[in-house]
Amino acid sequence: YLEKYAVPNEKMQLAYQQIARYLPESQLDKFIQQSKTKQTNDIILAGQAFKGIGQGLAQRGGNNKDQTMGSWATEIAEGLFKKYPVDSNSEAGLPHQSFAIQLAGDFKIKSAEVILNSFLNSKANPDIKTSALRSLLNLTSGEAALSTAGRLLMSDSSTLDLKKRIVTVLGEMPSTAG
Image 1 (cartoon, one colour):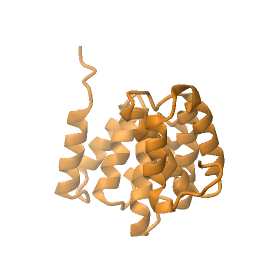
Image 2 (image 1 turned 60 degrees about the horizontal axis):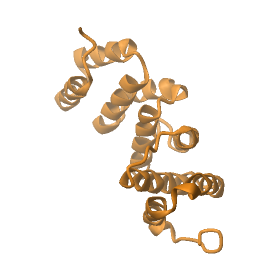
Image 3 (image 1 turned 135 degrees about the vertical axis):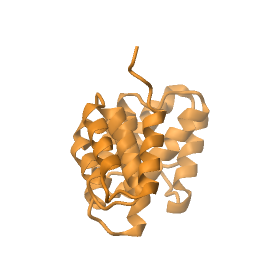
């Protein structure tokens, strides 16, 4: 169907979710590759297709963190970071920055580590900063992220709300103490 017809942008995520959920297992890899190839010109649409496929795979009990999805996640995250950089003041860009940050942590995208640190050191809103910290903690061994979290907690310029969010994120992380 997708080879012959275009899906309206506002229905893309749902369409890809349903296809990934109900498509026979033997056709999934081909579908994911075709979807990845089809969405190379628009990073926002690629993100919608990726989200839809990920949700569909999760609903069927599959793993959306295989090699194909991982390489696509890297492309999407890097594209979104490029389109909506740390210093972007666009409110419309916040959900895209948040999604890119989530991808960086979920798929352990090492190339995003510097960008995640930049979000933590920027004037980004508290949601973005805590998402960046969570992803950084998932991505690294944690020492650098813990140091940054400590610095933010001790900073007079950090709001009480941000400090509470940082403590919550740190509390969610599994302990390495034995």
